Length: 285
Image (cartoon, rainbow, N blue to C red; front, side, top):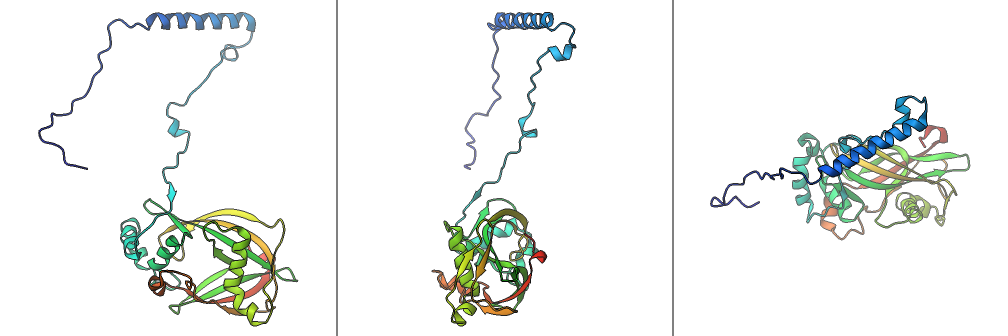
């Protein structure tokens, strides 16, 4: 905003002088007479009905904002030139102690991870304080012949820390990726090492009618202090070639296809996934 011009005349309040004779007065008078005539006619026809049942009452809210909720936060895909510019944007919008723990507290990710998610379209941020991270996630509830569900108990990260999971296979969806493609990619990335190692051809069959969608809003575990909105797309599936007991899979470089290899080297990635089978009743739908 440019500074005010000292030579500019001061801004004064503008008053509109109403004419002494209102040209609309006869119209108002005729309208009042018409309303009285309407009520008197309806009274004659209504007989002995109570007064309040004979008068049609139309009410309007004095202030619509008290009755209607308007969203003042619009989600948009935010672009930043590099992780440093993202960091500078986040600092004044997040609690300082929470932001300082990113990539330092065991199990958390750093600003390089978030920048990669944004640049690849996996995440969007709301321009607010604090920002809200929105992610579309595919959740695959893998079933075995005994109707057990495969869950990921924990992960081993590239910095040596361990992150607890206790949930079915989950993966962030890519932009414009359909559900079936996301399911196949998630299985291949997180379970492919043990399926291909057994000599079996990976086979994924999605159970018809099993699709569920729900939205969860909670603070992010990966990015402390950053609220998150997860749109979860869940299906049940059968995957060939998986062991019956507990097992571990090794994920290839998480950002192997990333064009920003220098940034990817600074990000925290998942090295190993640890899996076990549990009864279907013990897993939330």
